[in-house]
Amino acid sequence: MMKTLGIVAALYCLAILCSCQKEVESHTDIPVTDTTAAGEGYMPLTAGTYWVYKDSGFSNAYDTSTVLDEDTIINTITFTKVHTVSAIGDNDAYYAIKDHKYYFSIEEDSIPVTMLVLNDTASVGSSWEYDMGAINGVPTRGTGTTVEKLATFTVQGKTYAEVIHTQYVLAFNFLGTYTDFATYDFYFAKGIGVVRSKVAISDVLGTGDGITATQELIDYSIK
Image (cartoon, rainbow, N blue to C red; front, side, top):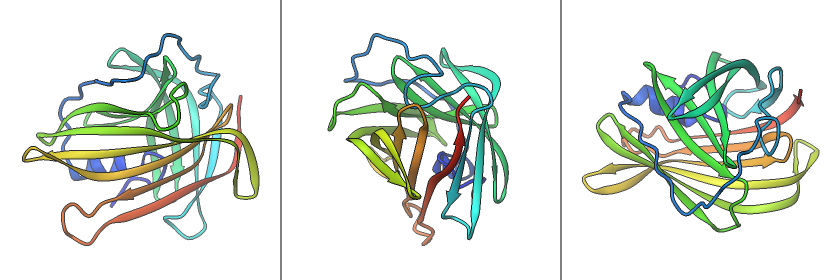
């Protein structure tokens, strides 16, 4: 059903369920001025950096995501290619940081599908909207929220410092009303990246195929 159950799992599911059209960027209520370097902040993107995640989607499955020395431009933002080897195959995604905003993106039929998942300067409780354009002719938006900022957070027995927990809800506009399709929770540790993620995909098609998957960091190397 999905190419991967990784941090961008529901985006892959979305790409399979829908034919993607045009993406339009729009976000509000996040005043920022500085640019975050790729090797700083909450998502190091230096070539050779890798993360290994325990994947709840499969028994004893592990996914390894490695940052490549390869960039691409999407809507004037420079994205870095990240290659993931998972239990069911390989895939590529794209991560970016600009002006303290963090993006995940995939390409399906050469069309980018992008989420704005973190602003590391946003205060707890603040939210933003990100217009993802029309997907299969249906207007789609993401709503992100900074849920909490934690001094420490423990995953798989390891404690990480300075962790930001965000939630991102993806919704389709059906007949003038937005309906939630997927809810993501991300835990970003400063200087490390995503240490835990969870995605819950709603059964919007009424097929009984709602999906929940969790990934937890078990090993990494920051270059």
